[in-house]
Image (tube, rainbow, N blue to C red; front, side):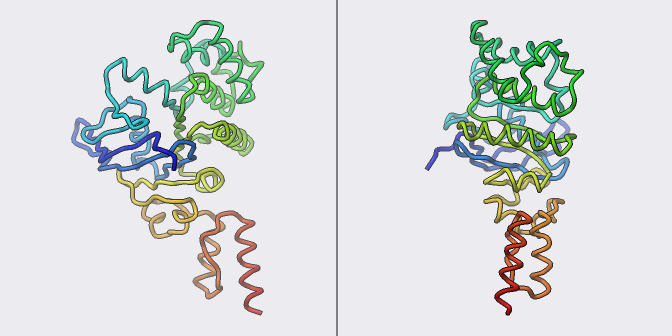
Length: 281
C-alpha cells in the first residue's frame, strides 16, 4: 500500500471575522493517486487548497506532507513548495512575467538552480504542455487554454511530487478541456500525484480515482468515483449534479428496470440498459 503524500487531521480554519471556512477536515491522499475535491462555489475548496502548500495556516489541526507535519517558517515553506505545486484557477493570479519563458523560469530560479538547469526545465515543461515556440510571447496575449497550459508548465518546471490544480478547465472550450486532461493524465503516468478541484462532474468521471465531496466547509462523502457519483442524495445536498449516464440509469431504476446506477459513461449506461433488456426477455 502506498503511503500518504498528503494528510490532514482535524483541519479547521476560521477567518478573522469568525466565519468557519473549514471544519475538522480529515483526508489522506496516497502517492500516485488522481484525486478530486468537488463542491459548489463557496464550499471551501480553494481555502482548503491554500493550506496544502502553506499559503494559509490552520486555526487548528495539522497538515502533513510525506508524513511530516507542516511548519510555517520561511525555510520549511520553501521545502514544502518544492514538493507541492499549486495551479490557481485564474491564470492572471499566476502569470506576471513579460514573456512565457521568464514566467516558467520563475519557480526554478527561486529554487536556486543554475541557469543551465533552469533552461532545461523550461524547455522540457513547455514541450510537455505543447507550448514550445511561445517562449517570447507575452502571457496576456495568449488564449485562456494557452494561459492555463503555461501555468501548468510553470509548476512542472518546479518538479513537484504533488500538483494541485484549482478548477483546471474553468473557462476552456472542449478542445482546451481535452488538452488539459491529456497533460494531467500524462503527468500522472510519469508518477506525479494530482489533486484537482472542480464542479464539472463529467470531467471528474474521466479523471479521478478518488473523490472528496465538500459542502459548507466539511467533507460529507469520500470514496471511489463510482461510489460517490451513485449516491445522488449526497450530490444533491452538495448542489452537484450526478453524471448524465448515472442520472438516466437512476430514473430507469425507479421505473422498475433492473439496472445499477453506478455507471458513469454513456457507453457503460448503454451496456447496462441492453443487459437489463436482454435479461427481461
